[in-house]
Each structure stands twice: as C-alpha cells, then as structure tokens.
Image 1 (cartoon, rainbow, N blue to C red):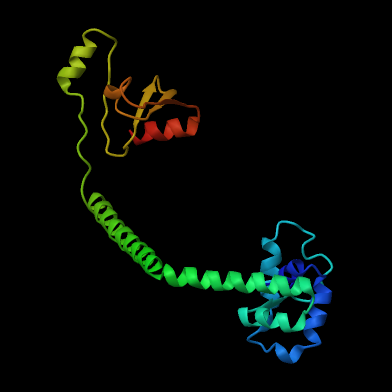
Image 2 (spheres, rainbow, N blue to C red):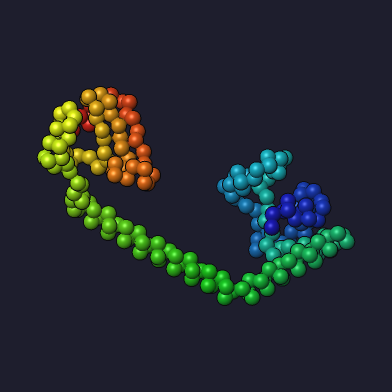
Length: 213
C-alpha cells in the first residue's frame, strides 16, 4: 500500500507518517518498505485524475508490503493506529483465504482464457485460408446482360450501349457521361435488404470510372 493511503487510514499527514517510520527505520528493510522509481511515479501521477492528490510532494512515494504494514503496529501506538492495523491485517487474512479457497476457480478461468486464445488463433488461421483462396481464384462470375436483353431494351427505349470490365467489384451507374451513382448492392435486392445508392460528385472519380470502361 502507498504511504499516502496508509496515512489517510491512520488519519495523519503523510509527512508525519513517514517521519515516524524513519525514526524506526531498522524495522523496515527493503522487503517491508521501498520507494518507487521516477518512471513509476510519473506513470502513477498520469493515472490520477485529481490533480491535487500529489500536490506538494517533493519526494517519490514509499510503498509498504504486507510485512511492512504489520510492522507499523509496533511503530504507531495510538489507539487509532492499533484499530487501523487490526482492520488492515484482518483484510489481508481474509484476502488470503479468498485466494486459497478460490484457487480452483482461478485455475478454471485461466484454462478458459487459454482455450479462448487457442480458438481465436484457429479462427484467424481459417480466415487467412479463406482470404488466401479468394486471392488466388477468380471471383464468381456476375450475371451479365445478354445481347437479347439489350435488343429487347433498345426496341422500347433509346439505344442502350453495354460495356463489360473486370476492373470493378461494386456497381456504378453512369448517365450521359457526367451523372454517376455508386450502387451498394445488386439492384434485385432493392427494397428487400439494406440498400444504398450514392451520388458521386467528384468529376475526377467519374472520369476515372469511364476511362476504365
């Protein structure tokens, strides 16, 4: 736990809390109490939303391990300190019991995570196989207008000229060489499924489509 958090529990200033520890520094080896690095301190401050939490501190915070917190009861002897130490150590004991009693559950969760990762890996591999197949094979041939279709249309309406190309996947409608629409799905699905027709306003795009034809 951080020194400032412990000081708040003991209802004293962080400065006063650390001074009491320093007067008994022989009781707090590095395995009981250590100071965080400058990089850790910067990362910690960046994660704190409230700007005045670390205001006024001229040194990097200290962190106390479970053993160090237990040792505090020998240093801070006020009635408040004794009660706080009892509550903290009780919490540590209950937490340890929880971890021990739920060890099987944690192992099961870990196995589930590993299985999910393995499943995701296999799924990604299957997708890669599909994409590789699509990249190496021609697309399914789209239904094209036949000469009979064109003759049938031209017998009723002004002349229709049909050109085919393999350059596009989406569908485009060009009218009089300057009015263009991008059709997001097969026209046969209009009104049945999600469908969109977008008007193209960029003249360069329209020219590029016509040039490809």
